[in-house]
Image 1: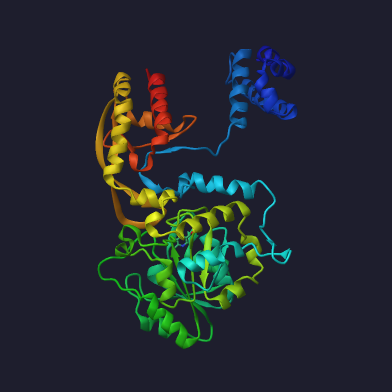
Image 2: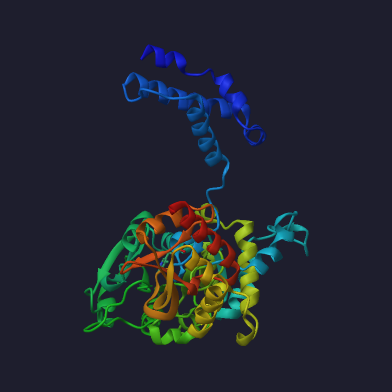
Length: 463
Ligand SMILES: *Cc1c(COP(=O)(O)O)cnc(C)c1O
C-alpha cells in the first residue's frame, strides 16, 4: 500500500501533461485544485484497499475527462424526438431564431429598458409591452413578470393578503414541479376558502362563500387535467357578474396564454385571454412560454386601476422581468399583431398548426437521405403512426396525429436510447414495444445531420 501511495505522481507532473488547450481554457489554480481532488480520492481508495494498481496515464485520462466536462456547456441544444411540442424539461416553447436575432441589437447595446426618450427621464420597463398586449386582448393595462407562478403570487399577495381567496375544489391544481395552487396561496399570505366538491361547484357555492374577509374570487384553468362526466364548474362571465355585484375582484389564471383560437382550441376547453377579458373578469394571468410561444414570463392583464395597485407592490421588484426576456416577449407580441394568416414567426404555433402530412413528408425526406446508411449500420426502420402532444400542461386530451421513425437493431433499444441521450448533442427518444421511436413532429429539417451523425456514432460504438 505504501508503495502504491509513493507512486502517486506529483501535481506539477500531471499539470505538465495536460494538453495546452485546457491551459488556455482553465485558470491554473482551478486546474490544480481539480487535480488535487482526484489525487485525494485516489489516495483514499488506496488506503481503503480498493486499488491495487494504477498508472499515470489513467490519472491523466481522468483529469482530462473531469476538466473537459467542467469546460463544456451544460445547457445545450438537444434533438427532441418525444413528440411533445411544449416539453417543460426541454425548454418549453422554442424561441424563434428571427425574433432572437432581432433582439440582439437592443440587448448587446445600451437600450431603453427604463428610459423615456420623450422626457429624458426614468421610464417604466413594463411599458414596452402594455399597448401591444392590450391591443391583442382588450385589456386596459398589463404588467409582465418572471413567470405565471410569480404572476399568481403577485395578484394574490396584492389583493388578498390576510384575506380569503374563494376557489373551487375542482381547480386546486398542481401543475408539476412545485406549483400547487394551495401552496402558492399560503406563500402569498392568503387564506384559502375552498368551495364545492372535486367534480361540481355551483354559483351558489361562490355566493355563500363571500363575506367581509373575502379578498378575491379566483378561477384557475385546470390546464393539465379535465374532470369529465358528472361535473360542473361556473363560467367566468357568471363569476364576473357576481364579483361586480359584490364589489369583489375576480381573477382568472388561464395558464397557457393562447392568443388566437388556433386548431379549434376552444372546443378543447382552452381559454383565450381576449374571451376572459371580454366576459368582464378583472384580471387574467398566463405564461409566456406555453401556447403563447415566447420566453419564460407571466402576463397579468386587465383593468387599469388594479394593474396600478400591483405596480406598487414591493414584491414586483423581486419578480421583475429582465431585458432579455422582455425583448423576446415584445417581438413575439409584435408578430401576433399581424393578420392571423400572416403569423408565421412563432415556432410553437407553427408546430401546432402543421399538418400530419407535412410531418410525414419531413420524415420521408430524412429516410430518403439517410435510410440506406442506417440499414448499413445494421438497423431496420419503419414509419410509425403516433400521437404527438401539445405538452406544457395544456390541452391534455388533445392529440396531434403524427409520425415517428421506428428503429430496431440487433441490440437492446433501451441501451441505444441511453447512448443517444449522452451524445454531445443529446437525442431524446422514446421506446415503445421494443422499438425506439423518434417523433418527427418535434424534429426539424435542421436537426437531420446531427440526428444521423448521432445515430451513426452510437451504432459504431456498439459494434
Ligand atoms: C403552467 C401554469 C402555471 C405556472 O406557470 P409558469 O409560467 O410555469 O410559472 C400556473 N397556472 C396554470 C393554470 C398553469 O397552467
